Length: 229
Image (cartoon, rainbow, N blue to C red; front, side, top):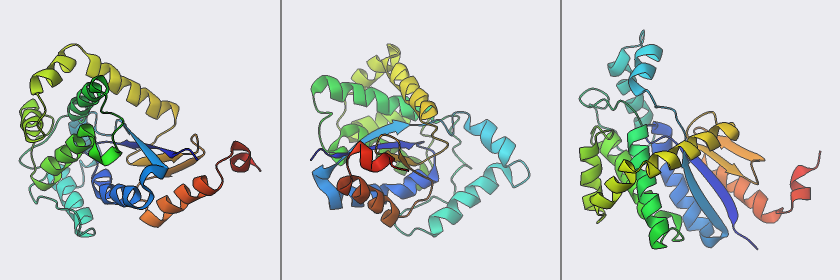
């Protein structure tokens, strides 16, 4: 039986995607090679400053949004949220860290390592390292200096990453992701899509609901079974 294809859309600056990482790890632990996860980025914090200054204008601006992120973190003991988030470092856009990860994905494809299990891929590890750097350490992960530090931590040659950035290959791959998210009507982060888009889970979705959707596709894999009315 072919593996269940899971399309996972997220924005690196989204706290709910940060929280959801544990659920992805549990999915991989439970289902192993019965699932295949493909990660995509969606554009929620493309203009982070504009978003916060507009939507949180009357709710405390950056300080208010930072408090909100901390309140979310307090509900999930498996994550760490820095008290200074959005105060000391204010990333302008999630597009920059997204391009960093896309550059690593390109290098993985060229090296033939993209077929590794999802959690073992360097691109997956880089995305998680970026989230930790932002949410736990309150670093400006839109700054390429932080990307260089993370590349070094993961044993990635940053010169190769930079080559993919300079050539616009990474930008092109990011645009493909953003276009896909619009085509598939992804309205926010995180979003899970299965069964050729018939099953879509958005936002702070509990593990049991994600698990139930995977089980449904495993037990009823045919197109006819999924599309009756």
